[in-house]
Image (cartoon, rainbow, N blue to C red):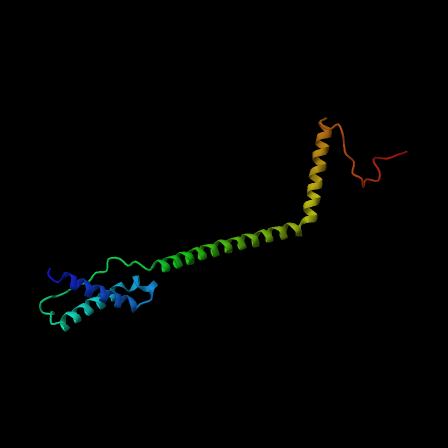
Amino acid sequence: MLMQSYIETLTNNAAQQAVRQHKALEVTDKRTNMESSILKEINDKLTAEKLGESIKITAVQIKSVVPNNEILQSATKYVAAQNELRVKETEVEIAKKESERMQALSQNSKQSIDYMNAQAALNISEGVKNGKVNTIIIPSNVTAIGSFK
């Protein structure tokens, strides 16, 4: 094609104009609109240069859209922040559940302590009965053991 360089220049200019009409993060979603805008711009320029009858452009296809590197970095940071937020929300939920668990345990603490003391006494008595205990530790708050005469 004899006018390849000219057509490339027209196409690049039309593409840049089409991209400027949209926000950077919306460009990919507006691909169809941009293709038709680029096609119209190229054909308008060819007609203005009186080349519209000689050169016919019938389709434009945008194969890929490469955003500015700063936009990619910003989007990456945004996604990372969203992920970190989800992690923090999960941590808060876990802390709430742990708090509820601790509260439930503390409300029944008297019963739990009585049960643990009964279990300990049972284990000691089983050990004494089976002859496995040689020494019994007497707590300091015991006032009397057995009966004295």
